[in-house]
Image 1 (cartoon, rainbow, N blue to C red):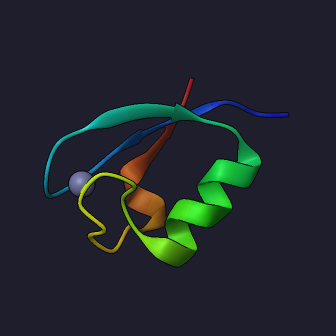
Image 2: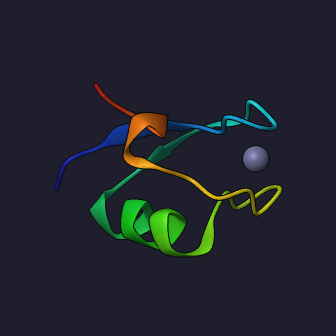
Length: 45
Ligand SMILES: [Zn+2]
């Protein structure tokens, strides 16, 4: 399981996520503000 950092391009919230969370965020958007998220918003540790 890979851990990556998600940084929202809109609200700037940074969250550590696993693969499952990453897929969820790509599908549903930022967990905080629901802004659409893209591959560029994730940074590998
Ligand atoms: Zn956000």
